[in-house]
Image (cartoon, rainbow, N blue to C red; front, side, top):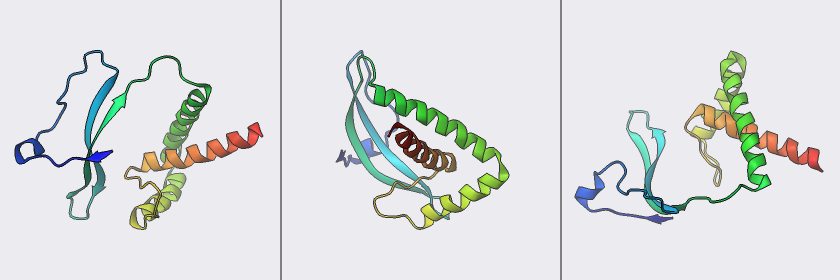
Amino acid sequence: MSQVTYMAPVDEVRGKLTLNRGNDSVIVTRRKSYGKTKNGTPRLGPKEMYVYHKHRGSWSPAVTSHRELFKVAQKQAIAEMNDPERLAYWQTFFEEQLSKPKPGEKQYIKLQCYIAAQLLIKLKTDNDTKEN
């Protein structure tokens, strides 16, 4: 992905700037938000621009399997968040990864996303163990 620096008037523009008229690709411009600082100002990443190519045809068995595991992980994450004991358990790990990020690891800003990602990793390793 390339980093883009816009001129002053364009820098403040928000929203969709291109139309999708049945093309196989979409130009995406975004700026990730990494939560907020303690005083409430957003922690924004660099501006990015890339082309997203729409998938045509059927998905591979590996992708289909991953989507099913992701669906299970999302349902389990919601269940974990509804249990106060499990929520407190996950909260400690979530806060730790926010305060002390490890190099090369993704940093999550939403608790549910963090829980789902950790559960997905566990489901994948369990699934790989069953296949071998």
